[in-house]
Amino acid sequence: MTDFHYFAVPTAADPGTLNPVYELLDFPIAMGKAEDIVLTGPAPEKPLVDGREVTDPRLVKALSVPVELDRAEVLDRSSKLAGVLRAMGVVPESGARLTFAEDVPPLARALGVLAAARIGLVVDLRAGAPSDSASDLVVLHAIEDEPVEPGRASVRVTRSRFEGVGVTIGSETANLDQAMRDSRVEFAAVVPLDPQRTLLLTDDGDLEAGTSLEWYRTEVLSAS
Image (cartoon, rainbow, N blue to C red):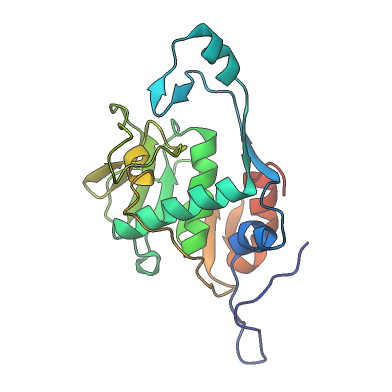
């Protein structure tokens, strides 16, 4: 198991601060490993280009391959999602939790888990976890929305990786494809966490920041 690079070094009176996502994404990129493939997903059922479904048979064949994301894109997309959640008023310290509906694609789910850890937001992965509109829940789920047109100054052509996915907080729902491609939303910096900060609620028990690194490595990332 990789030792943590502490933001604040532990002492006899202080446990220090760390973040598992920093170990898996930020630090390896700084060490020249940005292009390593670390996250894979199934081939899309309906290939998209700039948010629009492809109909040309040749393009459909070319794009119907398993998705592979390198470490740089995983960091980019997860930190942007973390920034979107921040912009929507999510305050991890308030007791907010992130949950996923069953219809969320695996790739979006993985990026969501990493985004949450980046800012210290608890992720509830327990079977039967609540997915209603309680004010302390942040729910990712599938939505039906028209593709977002690129070309406006605020909308980037960059693939969001969240096409057809929305986020609901209380009674408010946002289209993540649009929010993720909006250049006005800032990326979130990694947050130093107490090693005892709970990050994950699973059927096998809770996981704290200081003991969760191997879980993220084996359960979220395809390789690291």
